[in-house]
Amino acid sequence: MPINDHRGQAHTLEALIATTVLVTAVLFALNAVVVTPTASGTIDPDTQSDLRGQFEDALGAAEDTGTLTHMVLYVDNASGQFAGDWTPRSGYQTWPDARFTDVNRTLDAIAAEEGLRYNLAVRWEDEASVEHRRWLTYDGSPGDEAVTATETIVLTDDMRLRAPDGDHPRLDETSQHPVDDVGDGPVYNVVEIRVIAW
Amino acid sequence: MIDDDRGQLLLAGAIAIALALLGLTAIINVVVFTETAGGQGSHEAVLDSERTITELERAAATAVAAAEREGIDYNTVDDALDQQVRQRTAERTGAYVRVESINEGMSGYRVNEELPLTNDTILNASQTNEIGRVSLTLTDLDGSMTVDAGEESIQIEEASNGFLVDGCRVGNDTLHVEFARGVAWPGDCQFARFAGATEPQEVTLEGQQDASGSITVIYDGQQDAYTGDATPGDIAWTIDVSYVYETDTVTREGTTEVPVYP
Image 1: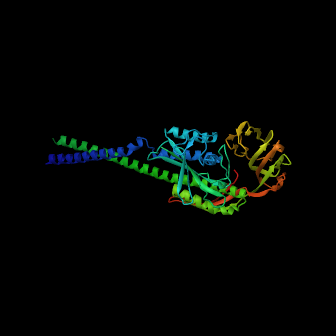
Image 2: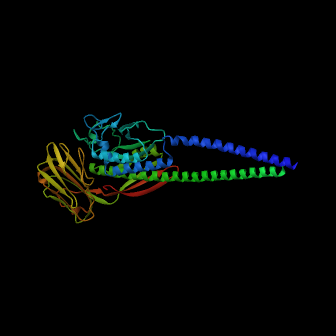
């Protein structure tokens, strides 16, 4: 009888161990499936947070010298489009001046560290709260876990268009700037500069 | 046989204990990760609030400066700004942001003079602490002129179909120069910024007798430091911006003194 008792206990323990090993293997496999997307091109949460901070700092530093505002005002009064080598589909193919180049050099450097691509957009709303967007640069369709960073800037009625050629009317004296006048008093509109990196 | 069975039982028991320890380690690991992730989330939420409030302050300063240029009571700015900023922030971060009020803090003054001036020196700033902004608009220039703000000076020359600002070609019919930001447009020229002076300082325009346009200078301090012809106007050198910022995890309410002409 003692012999059978010991063998029975041993079999029970073996069964428990086998079960534990199998369950652990299944859990490990499931965990691997969850991790897999991160390893195939998306960005882990820590890096996302760091990148977002870096992009937002870069945008904030650019606006400290009024450069983002300058970019939004860089519109040709004749065409009502961004001046220079710009198309609605792709944004700028080449940067029109040194201030654009400086901002994008900084953004390029941040993105390059993680091997990312990015789009840069201007977003605003019209009086009916319909959202509009223009690409300053467009490098493709973002992935599922893209990082976004934004900087909000205020346009005021007395700011003038800044394209090198043509007229340079105040924002409230032209209907050619794509951003709509929705603000009361001196506020023309509040626009958002957004980086989407993936 | 008895010894063999006991040995097998002991082995199986040891493996079971080892697996239990491994499982415990995994559980502890998950708990630590969860704590870290949770902490990171709240850290992110605080950073978000910092960024949003900084943007709000900058937006308020921009709007107040524009209101003063336009001669509009800037107390009306907070409503317009409140609505716009609240909407944008809610869409972007889910945060509720309200501009409670914008009030004048420290005062300064602005002068706007047409060129040519009767006196080349438009500021002898014995009672002025800082120059906030120097903006020049030129519509015509014969020869060259120099804008000198003590440590920095910028030379502007006439050129065919435009102007040269420190050798950089810019403008067409009209040239705009922001000295405090070190930029000129239309087009793009950048140069050393006229940083705010901490010592008494003069702004002198040599050669401006042959120029047409206007210059606007914003000062901190007392109006009697001004030696030019125009009548100075009061401006808000700083504003006190009161705000409320609320999310599920962060609530901030306060008043910040913001420089309008940083």
